[in-house]
Image (cartoon, rainbow, N blue to C red; front, top):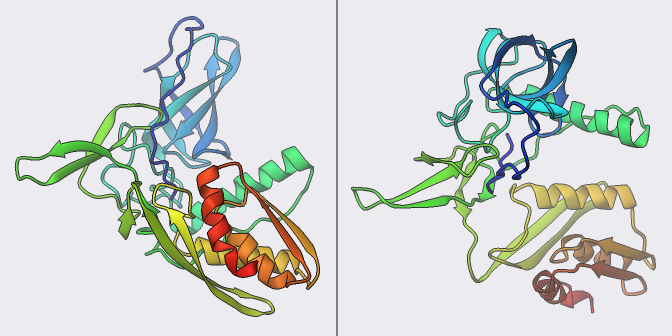
Length: 299
């Protein structure tokens, strides 16, 4: 399940003809597309119009409602508001705020967990074929740190709705591509110790497993409102994957682009040793400052 914590309001633009918002069509849903949508085609005069549909699964028969689109648009957007023939991979969403008109954060709450990974693998494989001309099998593997696909996100950004009648803080999340807010009591993908962006500095410790053996642990400082992988298992998994793929050797030179606070550079620097060189590159001054501190043991 993916989470997009910030509002994704549709960009203002001039209308291109008659609005089709609210119109309904009965369709068979096509393949998954990037961004949590599936592709469907609906009749539009003598042509078929592409619609990117949320809350659906490939092969399902659904009634979709258009949520964005005019006569002049190249494609429309829609929600599956009624499922006529369900996919065997469809489940009841664990989150009561998920679904058409609800919180816009999670794309695949209605999909069985293994099938979610299959859909994501299909998107990556299609991008590799279309953009790189590579026909490769893709597998999305589980990363330790969640609770059956839930309670993994360590950073959240809520809309503050003030205090309720009981004095407790009330929060909300935005609808998909909207500034409209849905009040929530709990977000099921939020880690029990999830933090919200704020001032100050945090400390993270990372160890990883590689084909050559364990590496780390190393400590990293990061701004409380700065970037760090939000899945608790992601830093270790990514470090292990990078080291296994590169197999860095003593004395080699490494260029670490978009280096953040130095996560990869710290482990790569250890691998290439004193005779090697790692050059981290990052435009953000704050992140670069933390990287300088985090990489000090290599100097």
